[in-house]
Length: 156
Image (cartoon, rainbow, N blue to C red; front, top):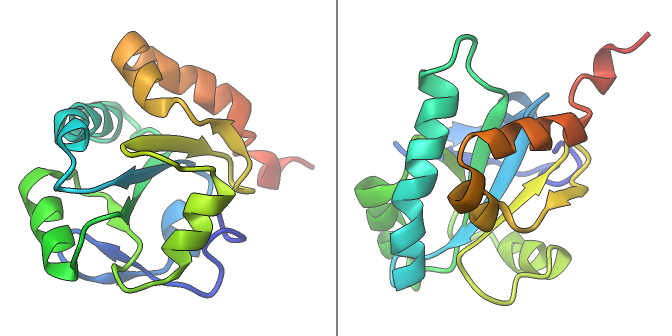
């Protein structure tokens, strides 16, 4: 993920700037392309919240998973409102960062909501994260983890 967000900052739900290298290291990352005005997004976001909460707050140790929200909202105010009203305690690319357009292109996002699950390198594990969570629930995370190679940094 260092490559994907190199030289950028992410923001937390409470507005703090977060170093992506630190926050995303050795984690499976879900890039969540979404917007508050989109009714299918508003339908899926609570499902993603529950999934995220179960993985991070109800497992010991917390699962190595993080979500980065890439907004298609119409304004920064809309984005913040959507995050506060519906999102889990995950990260976001700042609204005014033009890099969101590059990410949409890179991950072939033509419609929202879209949840793209990626390895540390930014390589796609699946671009059907939303469908997999709906169909399989928490068990899909094990498959993502098996594909993620997240402990590659620790191999001798």
